[in-house]
Image (tube, rainbow, N blue to C red; front, side):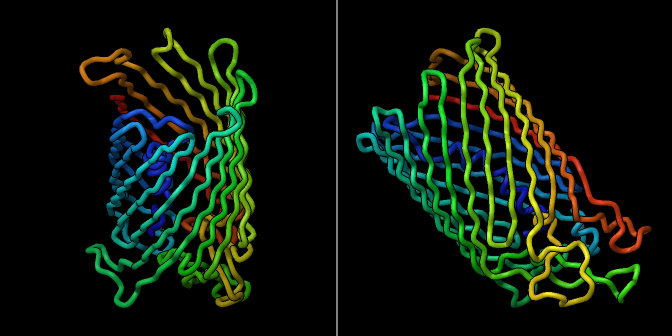
Length: 389
């Protein structure tokens, strides 16, 4: 639950995506994926391996199992301001899923467990995917329930604050529609609603306020968050297969919640096969912008100024730009022993974070509230080795 916790869960998305529910009236191929990931930026480094295996026990039952390990080191700007020690922790995540195919319907259930030194997360999920209208349309309904236990580490040895044990619960509902529009074009629509309640803040973060009216220095106090949050996201995507065997994908996502956060994400992805389709090249650009939460401020006038007070930079106004490139190479294209196909891929993303109302409080040569706005760049690298059986 430290400042790096959202990053570790972000890096875990690739593993979960590979283990997502099957769609359509054919189960996914049996395969195994081994990967190594690293995020570096903002004073934090997150890295570690992951593995996922999918096997089909029959024509209608498929099982997926995976795990990942993330090692987190460094100190984010939030920790530096509060004078905390650099991070050194390990996150372990495991997931298990089962798909059952009946006619043109796929039923899926899954369980995921993530453990950190101060944060335990358990999630149960279920989904139904249905092919219809001559297999031109696939509709997927998903529901999940999560339970989080938050504790607080108080020293470098990992000792926890006595009596500090909080809980948060979340429920997610999602609808996805994939539609074949023409011979060369596929469209999609997704909607997701999440309700959360309980302890929704980070126990290590604090807001800052002026030591006195007109003062040039500030003091800090623990953040105060609401105990509930409901968020909604609507996404659309369009994929067009171009005449020269390439493809172009456009995506847009709009997010809004009861904390008055509004976010827009636009993404453009171009894929081009090379060298007789042995190599696949992919170039991505992503633009993200959000406004700040209603109870966020970089600097409050005094302690307990409002009922809810936060300086979490994830709730600040920001603009992020991401440039990504990926290459994959099929080094086994015909069956060799028990391997039908094998590929290796390398992904690299360069992310530029720009905050519009979150200031760099480590620049103590400036008066409180006049420091430059915080910005930093990050790199994300992922190498994956995949085999189909």
